[in-house]
Image 1 (cartoon, rainbow, N blue to C red):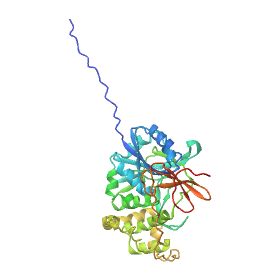
Image 2 (image 1 turned 180 degrees about the vertical axis):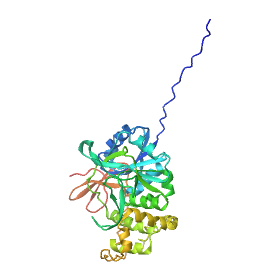
Image 3 (image 1 turned 90 degrees about the vertical axis):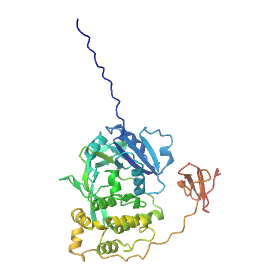
Image 4 (image 1 turned 180 degrees about the horizontal axis):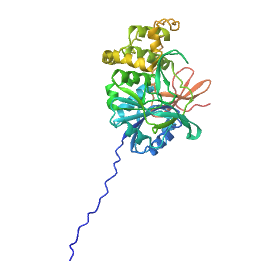
Length: 393
C-alpha cells in the first residue's frame, strides 16, 4: 500500500508596492498639462513610484476637482521660484532616488524602471535624461534631441549671463557630460545633502542646473547621461513667466550669487562681474547671510577641482585664461541694486494668509483677486486697498 505523500501548497507572496523612486514636479501658474503629466508618468513608470507635486503657486482651478492617483502628494512651497520649490521637494521625498521634471512633460514607457536600474547604487553622480519636444495633443514630436548641457563661461546669445548652461544637441561619444539641464534629471538624497543642498541658496528663477553642476564638481562627483531608454518629451515655447519687480531682482541676483558661493578667484569674479554688469561685491542681505557663508566655506578647499571642471566642461574658460584682455568691453558696474518700496501687507479675511492674493484677471478700473491658499475672492480698485463682497458692475 503506497504511503500518501503530502503536497506542499505554494502561497503567493504579496506584490511589493513600495515605491522605487520619487518623481518631484514643481508647478506654478496655469499648468494645463499637469494632470496629464502626472497620470501618464504613473501609468508608464514600470515600477511603483511616489509623486511629490510642489505647489509653487498653481492656479486653484488646476487642483480643484482633481482626484490624483494614490501615490501623489502635494507639498506647498511659500518661497516662489524653482530652486526653493525643488529644495522643498527633495526634503519631502521619501525615496532615496529623486527624479525632477517640469509640469508639462510626457515620460517614455518604462522610464522609472530604466532610471532605477541605471541610478541604483550610484551615490556621487547626477544623471540626466534625454529630452525631446512635446507637441499638441500630448504627442511626442520626433526623437529626443537634447542630451544634457555644458556651461558657457561668458554667454551673450540673449543677455550677458556668466556660467550659463546650454543644451547639448550633437550625438554623444560617452556618458559623462558637463551639466544637467532643464526638464529631466536625477540624483539621490544622499548626494544632495553631500553637495550642501544648493537649491536652498537660490531665490526666484534661474541657475538651478548651474549650481548643481558646480557643487557636484567641487565635491568630486560627476554628471552622466542616462541610457537612451530614459526618455521624456517637454512642451517648449510656453508663455514667458510674468515676473514682479522683486522677482526680477532675484533672477539677476542668482547669477551674481554663483560667483560668491563657489571658490572662484578674485580675477574670475572681477572679470565676470564687469562683463555682465554686476557689482563685484555680494549684494547685501541676499548672499552673505550665515547659511551662505557656511555653504561657501565648505567649498573653499575645492578650488583645484573647480578649475579642472571649468577647463573640461566650460566653453570659453581656456580662452579667457590664455588672453584675459580678449573679452568684450565691460559695462559700467552699478554700485547697488535699486531699493524697492515695501510691499503692502494684505491679510485674507478668511484664512489669515499674508500677501496671498494673486491676480485672476483685470479691467481698466479694478483688478480681480483670489487667495491661493483658501480660494477667497476679492478685488482691488484704483486706490490699492483690497475689498471683499460682490461688485456691482
